Image 1 (cartoon, rainbow, N blue to C red):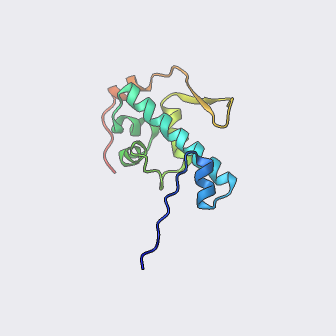
Image 2: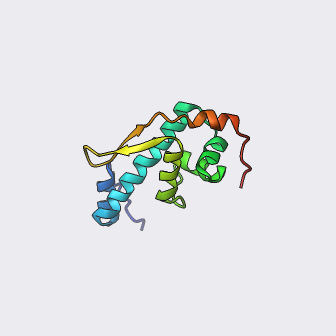
Image 3: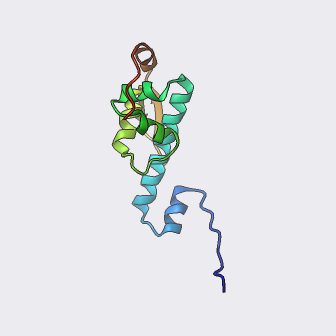
Length: 122
């Protein structure tokens, strides 16, 4: 006899945490990491930077940047996400809601990245 599969839909990080039986702090961490990841992708795409350019700016490997862009963040620390955003000239401002808003402080890391040679793949 086959087991019945029940589909569960979670629309927010809080709902996902509840469905998975996680505590509230874990749900908040999921939401914050998702917001960080989305902002990294948005800034990289907006500026037309290559994975190698971002890796050089953030002093990390191209492989890790590719993982971030592909939303494969299982082995990526929140610290690295913050370092990448900082290297891209983005900082957080005081949140008005649950998650921080991100502000581009006008840094122009792409000009230095374009003038630099690509970092080796690791």
